[in-house]
Image 1 (cartoon, one colour):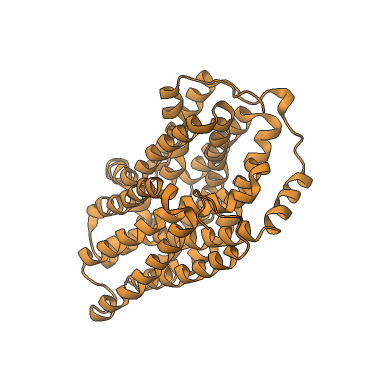
Image 2 (tube, helix red, strand yellow):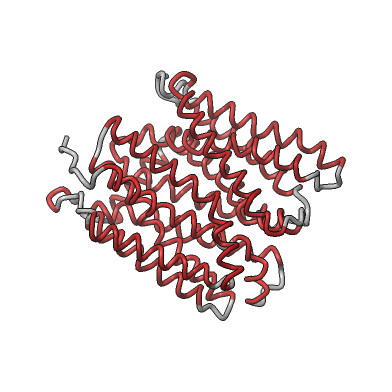
Length: 408
């Protein structure tokens, strides 16, 4: 085993990495308050079509994930991250000056493709520089800071839009991307020596994909992860319509969105406290049962209030559901990775990419059912939760020998 390569002082390293990965979350959420205005300005007739501004970002992200990890193993961490930022900035410039809907969507796809590199390769930087508990501590702090971004991104976007219009949100992304790239270039050394780099080939990616597909554990939990991310992405795509159209919250949209996002962060903390005692598999099944049960119970107030229950009641359901989602995200990904420890970097990239490709059509379908009520979203959470539970149970028939960490 090679000796980890020391990088920056830990406080600066953690803040830099959190800054780099947070740009992805910011690119998703900062323009949410202006989706309807963006669609109107670009001549979109169907209000539900503006959801593509969110989902197209993840199309590029899905492709970028599959390439960024293997490329960084071949050419080093820094060149791949530089390339990602260049593509991200080009995509932002396309969206900033977009005169047509098609150019906007193309720019968003490029933004997602470029953002995949700093998002994925920063995890490799941590693995290169640290191991064991030190690595786990750094990853936990980075993710904790990362979770805070969705809580403030819509509010930041709302302020920027008030001051300068929706196109200025892309200027903010460009400035932040340039700042992160310069900081990274000037301060962070390369962590993958030349002699440890591996040749990039389609064969290695294909071999990794075949290995994932041959593992029932990896396939089942990747499918479940894709299902859950799909319904979550449908929420991101329709959040502006739900809060500002169905509930007429106006500028308070950012507040309600942030409250829901914080619930996911809280669930991640709770999960870290319970997982060693209860196990990932047990917590995953409980969360899926809870997610499905909450949706089924919420059908009652949906029926009583003709599809749009009071906002306070909806927020209770949403935050409880998001708590389950917060439990699921980390555990499903970790269980899917269990059989792939010997190809951890490539496995993580491919699982992330596959789950995104599964999520996109689900998000598109649920999002385009929006009819001015919360019915499509709630039913989507319920149905997807049940399907994911079936996938997890199917995968569980081939589970490895149980351990205190996995809790088969």
